[in-house]
Length: 175
Image (cartoon, rainbow, N blue to C red; front, top):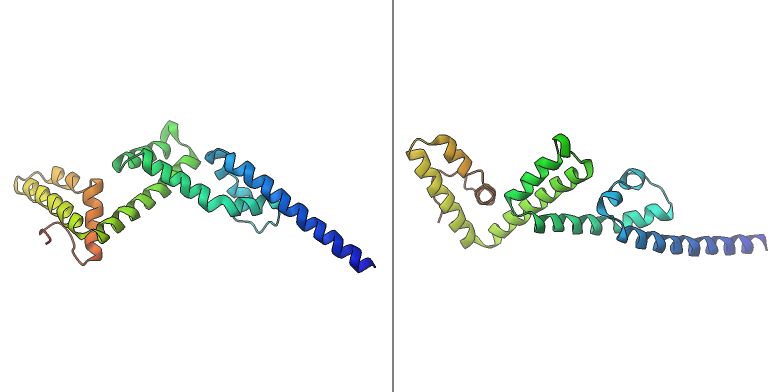
């Protein structure tokens, strides 16, 4: 009889736990990302078995991914780097926005390299344009400008994609 009562109590606790998880999921989905992201200190690295932390861990990946995609959509290419630098130092420093912007840069860069690798004709075109500009500036002994030219978003990521194809540097065009 006691074992049956305990089993019933455990079942009620499970039901309540799942209800609590649903409440927290709703709360977290409506929560601003900066507030949500700070929850990782409480739940992200712990083995807490609370309903709050289960909900946080369940929604965390998709909520953060959505925010990274939003940043990538809002700040194109080099603009995202400028935004990240602003959020990561000085008077505008914001720990959460800094970390999210850095993660969005990584995601944006990986997407661009992957795009070039699956669209080789685009890679060749962008790479060769960068290579031509670089070679022209170097020929004119404008070394600083030549270096800046290949540090643009498109050139830098075309070079990263080309490296995966065993092409190193802008000394020669590819084709």
